[in-house]
Amino acid sequence: MDRIRIVGGEPLVGTLPISGAKNAALPLMIASLLTEETLELHNVPRLADVGLLLRILGNHGVDHSIAGKRPGQTAETGQTIRLKAGNIIDTVAPYELVSRMRASFWVLGPLLARMGEAKVSLPGGCAIGTRPVDLLLMALERLGAEIEIDAGYVLARAPKGLRGAEIAFPKVTVGGTHTALMAAVLADGTTVIENAACEPEVTDLALCLAKMGARITGAGTARIVVEGVTSLGGAEHSVLPDRIETGTYAMAVAMTGGDVLLEGAEPDLLQSALDVLVEAGAEISASNEGIRVRRNGAGLASVDVTTQPFPGFPTDLQAQLMALMTRAKGTTRIRETIFENRFMHVQELARLGARIRLDGDVAYVDGVARLKGAPVMATDLRASVSLVIAALAAEGETMVNRVYHLDRGFEALEAKLGRCGARIERISG
Ligand code: UD1
Image (cartoon, rainbow, N blue to C red; front, side, top):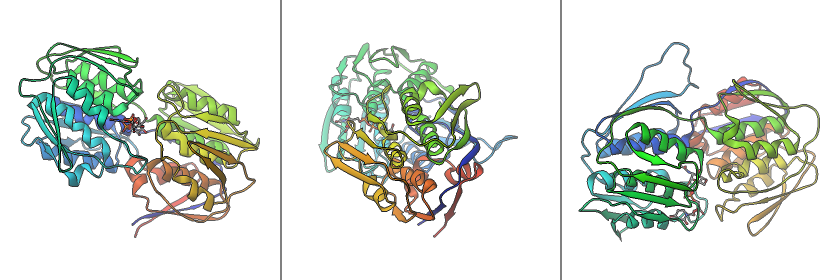
């Protein structure tokens, strides 16, 4: 298993390109199941999760091709993938594949909408709490699906097709909203999704579905209305920039000090996180090229943050913020409201010298003057990268073990940070 070795203490300076968003690319790829025509996606990040989803889609009969390199492209430039689901040959998504990536469970909605049936294994994915799928199934039931759970599989059937309905989510769910959207676009009649997720990745999916011929209004608000159509066609769409990657590297720069242009980043996608960074002492400016993050000399100030659905502070940046705050002056309070077990990075940050107390869903971080390198273990995707942030500012060497989590979500991490002056290398093994 690969490891990443980091020697801390170098400021980050330079230009760091931001990739396409993993959390948008995955549902967009899944949307290819809704049409027999070609869906061409640009700016798809080169990530393990993308490769795995291609395998899962291939199993259903989706052919794909990846465009060859163009002049000026590097390993850090997103790729163009064409997906064509001419015939769905299998409506079963097996445990061996779905258990490795939670988002692959979302094939359920489009398979059901197009084929009238689907059998999908209950999901796996990052170990961050129980993460049930009851609301996804509720949405499909509202649209007229018959759902049964048997031997770890969800069996969904809609022999007479799905029909439009009102779906009111009792809590905001990104996966639930994606599922409702992808099923409702081919349902008979009008669907109203209430308390829909407003995350930019939902809006990106809705934009792409509209290009495919879907009739959707209100994406990006809490009330989405879908007028079902009988079929969808092909489309071309570019994946939006990754706001979590942007926020992660912005925090890395705030941590080490320095001056980095996050190329291609869009501030509107993460304003709440940028506001927190400014409060903590980073200088942030936006231009056509992206977001520039600077911190020179001044110490970090502590903050008080609660994770919230978009446009609030994202849970996917909570671990990274905690890493940053280990060096802040005073006590930081971080409340996690989205996932109940998302504090697994605390023990590992402690190994680097961080002082963090947990009280239910709140973490109190008492800032320390210095961190010291140590061997640590990555436990989930965002937790892993929080260890990288801490290591960049720790004295001496940190070895981050089990980095396959990082490969699931961060494209060319060592190359991007290395180019900005970090002492970071991957050790294969
Ligand atoms: C997505 C993101 C993930 C992010 C999360 C919250 C992808 C691939 N993943 O995950 O990175 O951290 O949104 O922004 O886009 N819930 C239920 N029942 C359900 C579904 C969800 O109770 O049927 C709960 C969850 O346990 C959690 C909350 O709803 O407490 C939000 O989860 P959700 O928004 O669905 O997360 P994901 O879509 O899985």
